[in-house]
Amino acid sequence: MDNILSWSILIISLIAMLYAAFIIKNEKSDALDSAVDLKFYGLVFPIPRWWTKTSESENQITYERKDTRYDWKATFTHLVDLDQQKSLQNIFEEIAIERNLIFDKDRAIIHSPKELKNLYENEVEALRVEGTATQNSEKRLYYDGLVIRAPKGILFLESKASVLNGLLEGPFFEQMIENIKLENDTDA
Image (cartoon, rainbow, N blue to C red; front, side):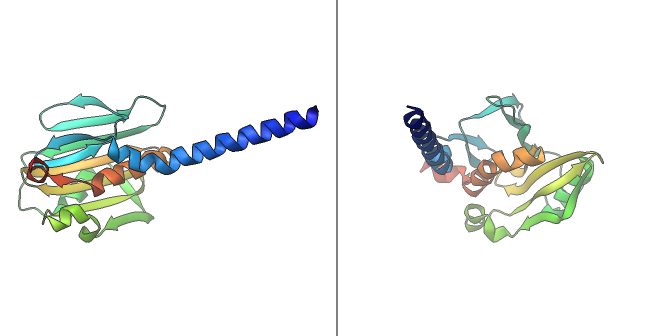
């Protein structure tokens, strides 16, 4: 009898793990398939359905995870009163200084514009930097920032999370970035 119970528990556990692996494997495609489009200053962003809009104004929208205890937040900002000719690198550096961010030298990745394929192919200039960083000399976080010279102004997108939670929500933020479209492309 003990042998049957042990085998039953093992089989049920294996089935549960296989089911979980299947769900996790399909999570990224499900996120894109069920995404809600956010139209923001000439671009369309596919927002995963589990991101909750926690604040919205004319020039800024913030999303958070309210269905879990993740320490994660994404902010989309239209940078107003900004010199439109300023380089995206200078804009990013100014924002990093303003937010008191110091990136870990060996953990920061500056993405080439060609890696942002949809934007690059539509001749939309963008700069993306991601990695672990320290904010205000004490808070460790995983940071992903993107500056875009969008059709209707300069946008700054950022994803901030604790180092561990950045690994959980970061791939969905990255997927959203990889699938940005021009607003007029979606109207056709």
